[in-house]
Structure formats: structure tokens, C-alpha cells
Length: 185
Image (cartoon, rainbow, N blue to C red; front, side, top):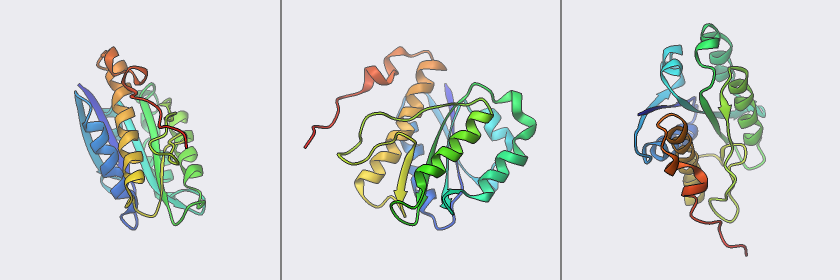
């Protein structure tokens, strides 16, 4: 059984809503033990516990929130060698499209990489216009179905990778589970 941590910071509940969809996606993969943890309640031990992590926070001035950065800078620093080699991905909400959410995802993945996490994007589209190359992003809360699907898919992909590399279930490899690309218009 693989352990999934969905770690999030949310100010206006938008990122918290995203986190719930990400957690649901990860939980939809057999064998995943999923913990949904708000940043204020998170400990370094939560990160040591997990095999894979989805990290989300609001976009603030085009980057990750200072609270999330502080968690990586101060709370995790003593865990450096203990968390190397785990899987990680990112998600972010912003005040509007073009607000920097993809940059925030890149900031989060840079922090994960510095701790040795193996980060990934998702290559297939979840709708005609939604991709997850850098992670799941939304403008405000994930109210529309496309945004919800994007968050859910990110959790699914994290669960698939953990299923393959932690639980040794080759049938969960994304190339085996991908149904098909959406038709072009």
C-alpha cells in the first residue's frame, strides 16, 4: 500500500477545494492510503510518512505563498535525506487566469526537486483546453467540471505512479491506463 499526502495551504478555500479533488483522485487508485492535510496542521513526519505528495497553495504575487515556502525552508530542512526519491506534483489557484498559477506550480516543483522528489506533469488533456503540464491550476475555486477533472486527474496520476513504483503494479502505468486523447476540434 502506498501512502499519499495531499498538503495544501488555502486562504479563501479555493485551494482547499482543489486539494479535495486531488485527494479523491489519488484515493480512486487501488492500494492508496491518502491523507489530506492543511499546512497549519502539517508536520515533517507527514512528509516522511508519504511515498508521494501533491502540494498546493494559492498564487501570491506570482509565486508560492510564503507559508508554503516557510514549511519547505524551515520545517522540512532536517528531513533532507529521509525524503529523497519520493514522487511529487503541484497544484495552485489564482485570482484569475493568467495570475501566475503555473509559475506557482513550478516554484513548488522546484522546492520538491531540491528535496529529491521525482516530479511529473500530465501530458494528456483532461478537456479540450485543460492540461496539467506543470500541475493543476484554477482561476479561483474549481467550480466548473473541467477544473474539477484537472484536479482529480492529478491525484489519479500520482496514485498511478505510486502504484507502479511502490506497489509494483505495472497495470497502473499511465501508458496502460490512458483511455485516449480527446478528439481535436
